[in-house]
Amino acid sequence: MALETRTDLTVAVTGPTGTLGFGLMPLLQADDRVARVTGVARRPFDPAAYGWTKAEYRRGDVRDPEVLRDAFRHADVVVHLAFQVTGDAPSETIESVNVDGTLNAFDAAAAAGVHRFVFASSVAAYGFHRDNPAGMTEDWPVRPARRLFYAQEKARLEHLLRARAARPGAPALYLLRPSIVLGPHVIGAKSLPGGPLGASVRALARWAGRIPFPVLACSRCPSRPGWSRRLPGPSLPCPSCRRSRSG
Image (cartoon, rainbow, N blue to C red; front, side, top):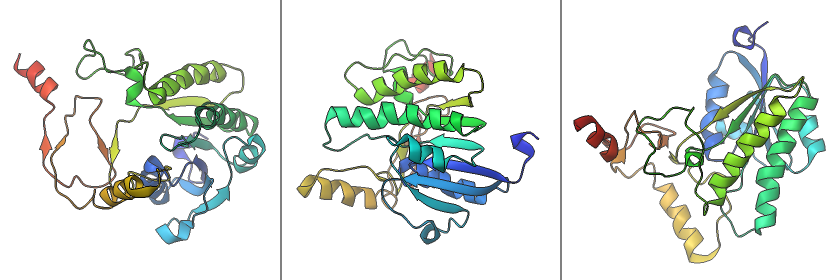
């Protein structure tokens, strides 16, 4: 039976308490096709506290293949969101979480017989180039900026995952390239620096959903921000797209 017509799906999510995870989990909770959700995270959390009655918490690190294989054992779909973006960890640690952890997740999904693997890449993988067209499609090549490790790792992982997905018996690979996500959970589970700077960032994030401010919300622009709730302020057209329309 096709996954689209089933009503007993099990979905495993890595990074369920991150920026994207907090937006995805309520959608899985509300989806009648999903019967069970396994959330894999390093930090403990209580799904019931958020009303996620379908979800169970599984403590684990994406750098531990055994934990992932166990967590994905009965999953039909794996959504891999775990990614270290901020913090003061050494570059080797960040790469082991982001690159090795992502490949571990895909390999564990393949070993568990998962049907689909969803990887959250980023619009940053396209790079910020003058010849990027307004409204470019997913066929546009990824050309990440050299100085942005985040974009570099996302683009690199797209290539590595495609190679793995071509192997016999591998899960079907779905690549997403979301833009900046705003909202009350913008920090998610990210590590922030200590002291006044970290406190200021946390305070700003708490007010992010309350302060009305204008945002660029052009339907043609791939770098427009996503919002985990209703937009708090007016939407403004993207200046570059506006120029291209008037020209």
